[in-house]
Image (cartoon, rainbow, N blue to C red; front, top):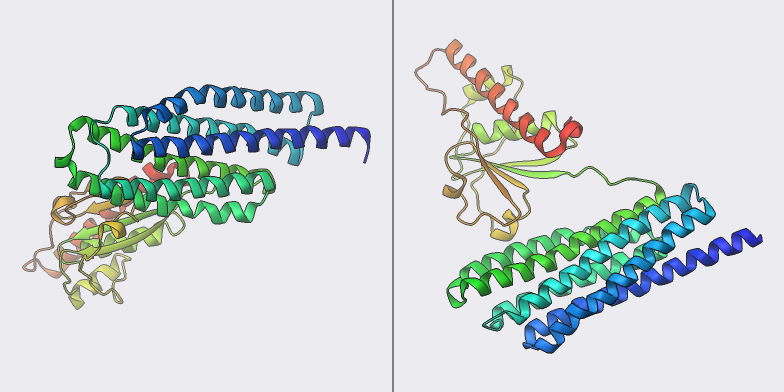
Length: 361
C-alpha cells in the first residue's frame, strides 16, 4: 500500500470513528430523554437539552472532516459516494439529536405523567425506533448494504405502531389536558421520525456501497364502495393494469355483493375484466388499515366505512357517479360503463401522478 493510500485509509477510518461516536451520543440522548419523560426527572431532561450542544459540535466536526477529505484526496467512485452519503447521514444524525431535545422539552412541561398505557406505548415506540436506528448506523459504518435493506423494512412496523399509539392517545384524551395531549403527540411523532431518519441512513448505505439511488416508493391504495361489485373493482383493475409497478391496489365494500354476468360482459368490452373478481366486505383493524397510504371512497364519505382513519393514511372521495340504471338499453348501459371506466381511470391516473410524479407510468 502506497503512502497516499495509507493516508486515505487513515483519514477514512477517523471519519468513521467520528460518525460512530456521534451516533452513540445521539442514541444516548434519546435514551435519557425517554427516561426523563417516563420518570418525571426534569434534571435529566434539561441535561439532555444542554447536551445537544455537544452533539451539534460533533456534527460540525464530522462535516468538516468530510469536506477536508474531499479537498485533500479528491475522491472518485466509491470513496466519493461514501463521503456524499456520510454528509447526508450526518444531517440525519443531527435531526435525531433534535428529536431527543424535543422529547426532553415536552417532558418538563407535562402536568401529568403518562399512565400505564401511555408509558407502555412510549417504551414500545422508543424501543422499535432506537433498535432500527442502531441497526442503520451499524450497517452504514460496516458498509453492509444487505443489512441496510433488511433494516429499512422495520420502518413500516414503526409506522403501524405509531398509528395504533395515536389512536389510543385520542381515546385516552379525556384523561389529559389539551397541553399534555399535544405534548404526548409531539413525543410520539419525534420517536416515529427517528425511524424515518434511520431509513434515510440505510438508503445512504445502499448508495455508498452499490451506487443505487433511493428506489421509487410503492404506494398501497384501498378502494371502497357499497358492495364491491362494480366501482371499487373497476378502480382496482384499472390501477393494476395501468400502474403495475407503482402501487399495490385492493378494493373492498361495505358489504359483499354480486357482479351480474351482463355487467361483466359490458365491462370486458371496455377493457376491464372482472370475470374472476370475488366481492369482499371490509373487515380490517386499525393496524391493517394503517398499511394503506391512501383510502379512496367511490361512494360516500370515507368515514362512513372507516370510523378511525390512520394518522399516516390519506382519505379521498371521488364522485364518479352512481350505479348504471338497469332500465337503460343495452347500448346506453355500454356507453355508461365506458364513461364510468374512463372517469375512474382519469382519477386513478391523477392520483398516481400526484404520488409518483413523472415516474407514475
